[in-house]
Length: 166
Image (cartoon, rainbow, N blue to C red; front, top):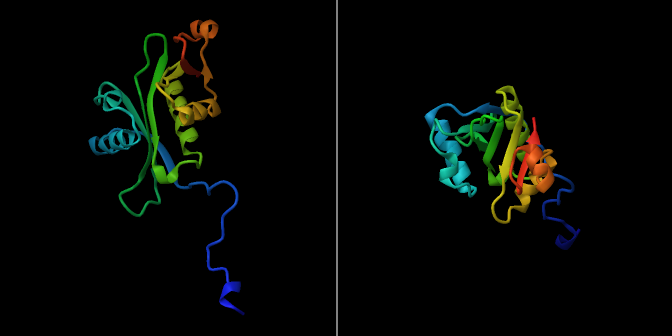
């Protein structure tokens, strides 16, 4: 057999990436976890002002229980507490770059919606500023609807917001 007949390149994997297992969702409570979540959000372009302080916002995270290093936090989301009308604003979401496109973003949004519903929220709302097509697509896949003049009023949000009834 000639060397040219050997295929030394690793095989190209077809289809979607392998799902990530061993992931748990929980609210961020400790100062060290809050710092890790804030850093992940900032690294993904979420402005620090959106994260706010411990009493201003609520942080959630996805943790990899199988992580061998200190890289256990794989995703983070930040929300405002519910307002008087029951709206919970989703201010930012981030998934570690090496784990994107594996369903973790949708899982994080779904878990945040469930937690917000359990805490009395009536709707989860998000406003995308600028060109955020990947985030808009994620929100759409998670069940969010874009507001228009007509449904913006019924959703209790302004035009341009995306919302998910809880």
